[in-house]
Length: 385
Image (cartoon, rainbow, N blue to C red; front, side, top):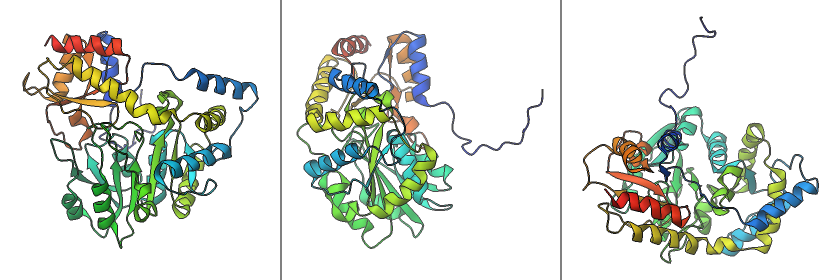
């Protein structure tokens, strides 16, 4: 039967099923331990769950304001000032979003027009480039430098042009687990001085950073903050990725444009969870303990695999660890990730899929946001190779 209309031209012809869906399905099929997709397998704090339940019982189940619940926006502004010394107006400069991905999409849609160039540091999380292309933008790529996956700012400088509208950064970095330094921020500040370039800073892993390092948010640098959308995630902080709840900070002029887009994509977000988070964040600062919590998991996982044939540099941030398999096989990372899942019972993500043209560094990404027993079992499987 002919299906009409039959002349649809895809706006994203290169996009298929995401690697996360593919690897998770493969893990389920072969009953493998799933360290591929980035989600915790442990419970949300019981107090927070109880608060949400209470807010539902209290009848807070209808539309929240488009910008987000006022109490939550106020608490978040207080948190930004306490942590980073950055002052934002709760009514004019912060918006609650349906996760970090929606915030990134809304920010790009708000400012990118047909033919604008957006500098993307790759490997890059997979939602960046499709959002750029859907808005008529042109992604311009700069690659992180091994072995520590740092940015060479001279490479960024080379690709800046009169058509550059946005530079996208991500720290702590997914998938590579690297973090940007104060010097990185100063160099970025120098690069954009005197331009109209906008920064979109993906900082969803802000509280997961290791070995005594500090998170260098762009909001700590006034000349960057004045031109930046900064994206955060409640899901990453509170072990609740399925809530799809995040938030975005930006100066008033940028936020006004962001909200024009946001209101027609989702309009508003989950009301009882917003109210519960407002109370919870005010009472609990357990996000300050998150780095220690995840560093213990990182160290536990690495201790378990230290006698394996995999090589590694400990992750500097996020809840992902890269493992180098170059001494095991010369297979492409996509092929080895599949074989590792089928034959050794551990699912991971090949890092080459995060490049616009696959770069095979023989690196696989493993999520260690899991219970110790699961990490131990995965490590046992890896050590048998």
